[in-house]
Image (cartoon, rainbow, N blue to C red):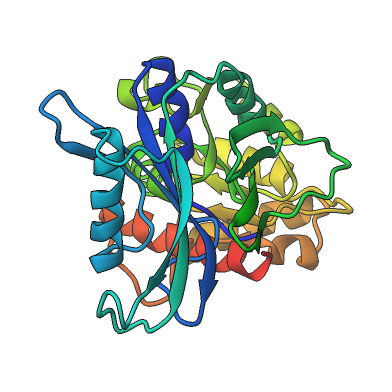
Length: 327
């Protein structure tokens, strides 16, 4: 499953709760070389000064500028259409070097969809959300049945009739971070814009930055290692605490032999720290295979800076490589 950025989806729920009209623009078909993939979406609304506010992107450039102009006319009621699909030839019509062709779905969303709140809560818990729309019916949002075989993105068109089914997938990457120090915070802030489900754990009270507690799951506990047992095995564990003994205990838990090991277990530290930990873990019965699953030091090879922000970029790039392999 590819990693996806879903700012538009989170903002759609928030803007709807505020009773604000918006236009949702979605790529429903893409032929040839295009700046974004099928399913990519952006959301637009007007502020109090009648200026466009934008959430997410369909690729930028002339295509996006023209799509924004169309959406603004819809929001100003200069274009009375509620939902329609328009074809864009990127080279002939827009002069973009991509050279492909994209079909964009425009939908003006005015009425408050009360089901969206329930859908968003279900999505946060890992369930898929299905959007169904056609030239005859505005979007219907629902929680997908686990046994459903709904396609992720399915656009069908016959003459002037069309329909679109889109699945809003749960986040592909889940990360549990232990340690709310400078590096932990930098990694969290680096992960947020790309769409990741984050659990952030620390034993210290009131250490999490206030602006982040509203966006992610912050867990303050005297027994951080117990959180590992409840975490998704398809996720990544990052060990970044201020206490080496706690780091060791977390390694014991994260690297326990299992039919399904975690996708990634990484720990901040030096090669000498790793050697000490390997010796202690070997004495506890951990095999060489178990120990090889520990990534320490973490981060991309060749990036040696110890600045928290640079470490964060390096670690996030490493995670993206791991999760791209598994998509």
